[in-house]
Length: 199
View 1: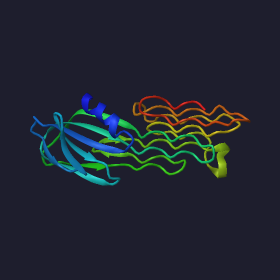
View 2: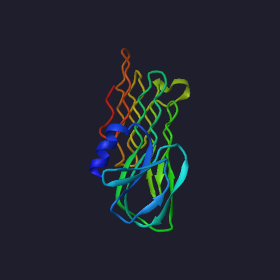
View 3: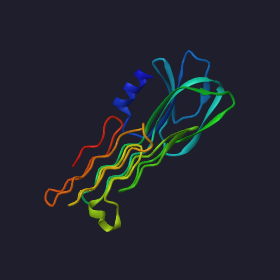
View 4: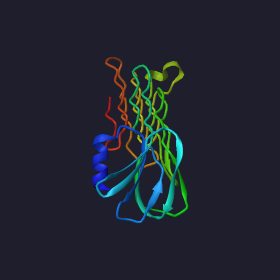
């Protein structure tokens, strides 16, 4: 899993997706996914289209699962950055012959709104938090929204907090906007690896 995660971080981490990885040497056989191929010691079932579908198990055993939710949308007018979608790995995860596991790939959020959750069976990665907007511009929200990683606080002449990473363990907090009358700055969205930057 460590080898695969390193490869994924370099090539696919900007996307929301769900992966089920069965060691080629195992007895697990299954169908499902927008693409299926071998990578090193794994047979990978990759779900990348924003939709709900199933992972259908013919022969059971242990698989590795990685789930990434949709990222939050940035705020409007000096808006904070959108938070990254929640990132979850679960291994070993036991799948059973004859079972069909629901798989959902969540899309990214619109301006100032949270991304959608991604799901594999009982595992749910939370959508990233939307970024806050300048002084609640046009009725929007100044603080960043909570999510898998929190959205950044919107630029303002008063303090705007970054959104929390909620639930904990899927990402990091969004950056705060400290509040300035001049040179207004917004907070960055939180990411899987570190919190969002302070404006």
